Length: 157
Figure (tube, rainbow, N blue to C red):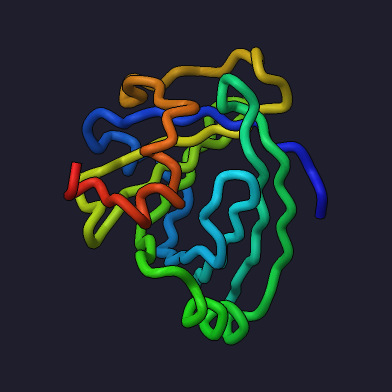
């Protein structure tokens, strides 16, 4: 499905978000292409998978083209074998706040210690509730993009 993704990213303070989470999943992802103009990601969660194509972001880093298609877990596993070196492993927590959902990612492996919250919006300047655990905004800082973290992990900063 073709769409425009409007997203903001934040570092996270503490672990209070865990108590607010209504869902938690472990996921693994890799990149068939990590170039910013056309990032192609493969993601696997349990027995499901997704292939996602993202375009380059706008000047603020909040908005970019996104196309995503669900695939089987078997297809995702097979495609992960073709991906560039550097997989991303993380636990994702889903936290509802008003009409929005925060996705908080606790990274593992070579990105252990990094925790990032993302929120998708309908408009770039849309207001939303800022929970106390929401830290510094890092929207548009490419080192926090998963494709970048697969190449230069948090442990190497």
